Structure formats: C-alpha cells, structure tokens
Image (cartoon, rainbow, N blue to C red; front, side, top):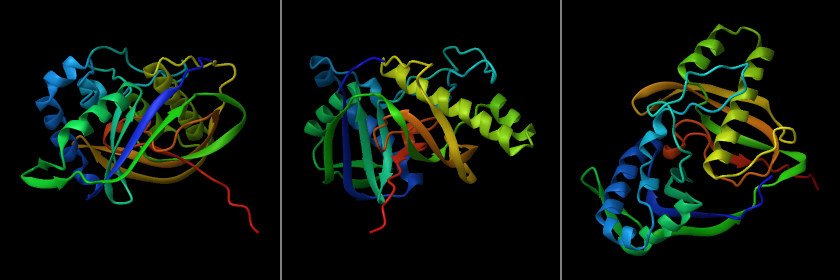
Length: 256
C-alpha cells in the first residue's frame, strides 16, 4: 500500500460543550476562518477544509452486493480533513493532512475567544497534540470502537430494515465499514490493497436515532476489527465533521 506520513493535529479547548452545540461552534469557527481568508490565500492554505460543504450526504464506495445510487455533485462528499468533536465534555477539533496545516494557521491568528450564537466561547487550549500517521496493513487485526456511527444512505437503510437475520445485518455492516475505510483512503490518497485489507464487525453495542443536520438517522455504536492501523479520534461515515463516527482503539488490559 501507499507509504506516506500524514500529519494530524488535535486540539481540545477548555470550553465545555455538549454534542448538540457542535454545529454552532463549527459555524463560528468557519466564520472566524473566513475573516482571515486573505491570509490563508497568501499562505496558499485552503479554507474550504473547514466547511467541506458536500460532506452532509455521504455515499461510501461499496462492493456490488450493496448497491448505492450513482454518485454526483449532490450525492458525494470529500473525506473531512477538519473534524469538530467533543472530548471529555470539552470542545475539540482535529485537522488531518492539509487540515492539520490549516488548523495550525487558524490557531496562530484567532486569539483567545470567538462568538457563537451570541455567546463568547473560550479558545484557551486544554491540550494540543501534533503527530504523524503512517497507514499500514498489519499482519494482525486490531479492535476499534466507533461511536454514533451513521452508516446508512436511504437505500442501505431500507435494506437494513427489511433484513431480519442478524447474521445478514452484520454482513451489511461489514460492507459499509469496508466502504468507509476506502473512502478515508481515497480522501487521503492512500492506496489500499483489497486483497490484503481485513475488516469486519465484531459487536453491535447500541442502536439509537440521532439528529444529524436536522434529520433523524439511525446511529450505531459498534466494535470492528481491521488490520489497517487507524489513528484515534478520527471520524468515519456521515456526520464525521460534527462528531459522529468517532473511532477509538480498544486496548485490552492484562490482569496482574
């Protein structure tokens, strides 16, 4: 597979929030970024990574067994390189690849606060981490948990609802998580060898309906296994821009 080092910048602010506030904070940050657009242009850093307008309606690339509508300008989205999240009840933001550079530039310009919905929000940094991820297909699989994952487009949701056997439902999810990993790879120009990549769902922990861009969608908490090493805290699936589908590595603790 493609060997490349991808920068990831993760910032957590002292500002306490709940998930329902992420869209407003996202909007406030985008407004702040656009006020500095001439500086971004001079630095040859794209501002669109902060808003990624086409992100709302994800249609992942899936194997033929799970068909999707034809993708077009209104049906396809770029993998979001800026992701707004809640971490330990505080506002957080992650920049990936070009998004890492854009996030660092914005942080150098913005100051200590912004205004969202008429309220002042503190941008005092609680934690600031910068790392690099080298995507690798390992010899063994690792288990990850994905929270509030929004895997379905309308057609796949109808298929999910009409499927009664749990074993068949898991097969649907296997294909969807496979598609979302390939969508991540496509967005970061990573070549994944389909013959070597392993990915499968190991548990379905919770199902609930969540509001995503004012639309109620079925969200799943699942665990899955893959031999692709994934960085923690990145998002997969629909709504990854606003905290849905956050991936975390499950560490097995040994008993003493």
